[in-house]
Length: 373
Image 1 (cartoon, rainbow, N blue to C red):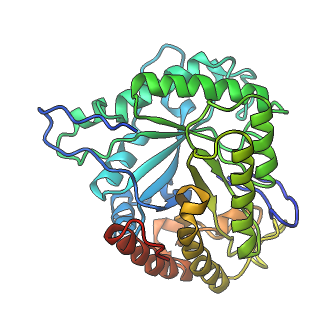
Image 2 (spheres, one colour):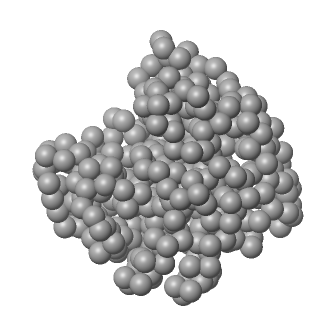
């Protein structure tokens, strides 16, 4: 879900509680919080991909959580019609069976709810319809969700975190710029809806790339404090140390905004392996071997600094990519390559990820307070 705009030398170029107990009549145990290291879905949801096999592989590879788009326009294509979960149900089921959490990115206004019905990137007209959709999602996948009742044999990996849109500072995702006032209104309505449906649920900030520290500082100046429960950024840049520098700048902006103790997620990070293969590079393309090397360097660095940064989870962009669209640098970002016909193969970055992620996961499970990494 990478945004399509180039940026500064530092930031690179832009992409993408109280737990309720399960009722005694339900046999399966409730989920715990997802592990530290996750991935974004990328091309995982394309037709022809075997979801169950890929999610099972994720679970064996140290993936604690998968971040995936939940498209509003697909679930509620018509006003007043039934909510259609046929796209999201298989993902949630496959992830739960693999004991992998899901972080939904709730995005994509249907025409009937859009401010600009002819634009796929239109924000909603008002906030009530989006909030109602979130309540429907929580009612499906939250602690008392109908999905779990209808699938009694599936481990109850409740969804508690909901990411509210993706990179609204980009017109690619949010047509009306500047975005700040309208997005804050949507955030507040979304958070209220989530908390009403699940008091332990959380609204996750959309995730910002480029000069994310300035964007988040601008949100605080516009009154966003209290509108979200978890901050999120997409710190794309070429040099590994600068990724950590961006996270530190964002944490400093949060401290100044009065949210020193609010958790943060890196909901996208990584490098494209499309060096020499894309027509309009973003500036952080590299080779497949170097993509793997940078992953091996950065993931342990994030892990060791997670407490200082208040960092709760990180998501590599992405699990799977087609690695063939010369117009899209992020089409080369995956750990795994999706070839024509639906066959898949591991890239060097996958082997690096599996080694690092499984080692860190074992360390964190054994001693959660250890530096690990």
